[in-house]
Length: 555
Image (cartoon, rainbow, N blue to C red):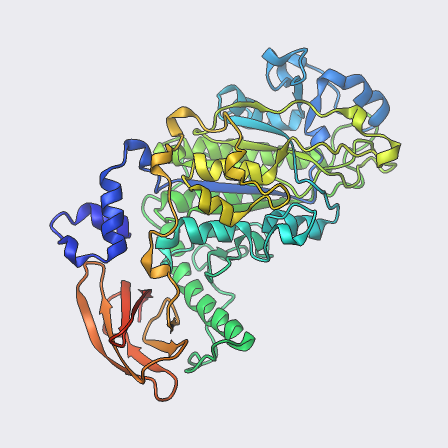
């Protein structure tokens, strides 16, 4: 049971039995409005891997002649039925006059992206990128994942921005019995999930059988080392392996239980495609009760240097197939989660590491560009268009036919969702990414009209840093965490040879206590007699006291 649920349900529990941060959380919950009930909200990221061609995804109809005759005479998208293909007929003749690629009309339930837009559940974000574009796949993916701006690696961090967000916004969940993030669709774990401090913010379950998701890491050979050296690279890496191994086993059980839970069903039929299978799994896990906050799925193949279109005047080809798969899969997913109240707590969005050049190449394809559109979708989304059509005249032979103007920084987009939908305060956003070039917080430059008023988080409800006292720096390490049998305790600084410890359960009751002898540099607390669940281990030497949250798994 989560801490918040415990506080809410245990009305007879004495406040004196709670730890200080739990008392504070209880007082905060008592003074919140209905809009503060955001604990079930989730984000679904769809990576369009390879660099999606935005210009053939959303066609700027206000300059269609230049697009079709000069820039893309062979691979342009013909407009055969304007009223059917127009994103928003009310924008006709304006600088937001956009045409959907016909593939984005594909969907058996909502008529694809077009239907979602008409139902007010899809927002088009034009010209998304970052200030200094890097057109290397690997570098640009890393820039997006770490929160950088392309000007200098000093403008971001080595860890992932999503990992940094997770470990601060959901600090009270760590260590957890479930992965706060889940990734599917790619065997390469996304760098964005790599936290600055926490090990195992997310789990990649790509290629795992739904009946036994965790099969790759299968325990260390024998017991974990009894003494992990502190203040050394070796010790840090070894600690990471031990923690990852322990958490992945625990996470696997949560995933399997959720996938097989009685209520874990899909309420609509999905297309028979890889992306649809990924989103189908996400919907099933959510309905199965897992409390994961962020999901990431991937569809690859967008590096369309050749045969993007099948031939001159024939739009069939790689890009059409990919957009059809995207549109129909999202169509089914949104219909599924909106079949009950689950959809009120979910926002999805698409992103790609960069776009393509404005001009076609000689192989019925396009080469690496800079900006691309994003789509944000779901019941909480305020439908519409943010930004204006790209200026095609900006692309010329002098700048290698690039459209370079960034209307929306990708960090600006995510900061908006993190605060207005997920409820993160400014300090959490600044920890995830900060505009070091302009010395400005992205919380000061959010996008308007992304989240519907009915789902907008009031500032009085924001999640703030500093609410979890157990996350403060401690003078001891406890591992593995989660633990099954033996919990190893290592001191990290000057310490007394003998320390007392208490093991406290979620009711504030001491279930185990004793003394630890660090003469050999470590000692062990036997955990096998305790039930599975969340505990707090407290150490004290008479002058100082520290706590750590511990997950007890199945022995």
